Image 1 (tube, rainbow, N blue to C red):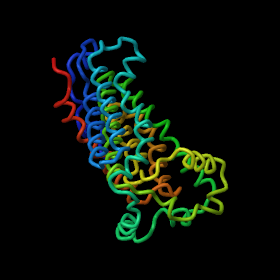
Image 2 (cartoon, rainbow, N blue to C red):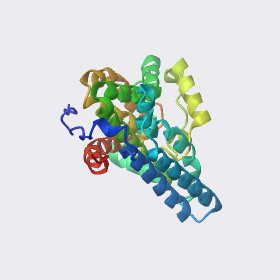
Image 3 (cartoon, rainbow, N blue to C red):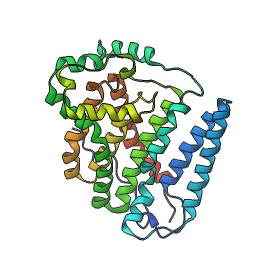
Image 4 (tube, rainbow, N blue to C red):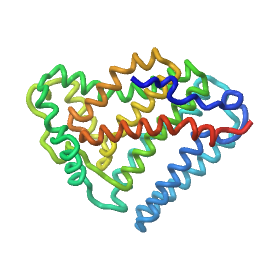
Length: 302
């Protein structure tokens, strides 16, 4: 296993991020950059919806700029939220993707991804995985792993914060937000619906569990279509896990079963193609290794 503690040093930030100064943090720059990129995508579509989305994103950039000028909070919880907020607001960005990803290229690229899937794996993994191990309890474990995303990401950020202070939290939050935003930019220009739209739902013993029913009900009521490639669940979870592991080995191993079961569960539950999962891992590693040099370049000045 790779030694994530030595894979990339935590970028040195002056005076523990200098939260007493009123200057933008690296997470502010990253969030504003994402809002600007998606605003451009919306405007290029030359549609009325695109114009309105672009205006909303410009307002969001203004909000980030204002936030960067405010005095830094001194409380424990408020300081944590000030650094981690880009990760916390990703659900808002996710909600608009079903609209955004239909502005430039209406329709979905699933046929192309299915061809890639066959070429890479020799089968449609999302269809065959549950047939290989048609066991109710195995299915329940992987489906629980899939929803553990809502547990792993915040826990990893908290663990990084407890182990390495605001500096560790800055790296973990930046890494996770970068992975999210890279995925979301892909969704915006290359929408893929995912196997649950094109293939039959899982039947038999793997579908008999309570957790199976809960997870699929959640997705049917709150999922944005066109957000399958790459898997943002895998990218965000693994990037947060890696970043946490670089400063807190104990938390890394505690979270390992959840991160692994989530990664496998994305395919087993027919939420993602196998290639979505693989791309999510690539995006997570890219975000992890790109973060230290980006923090050194964008970090607050002494």
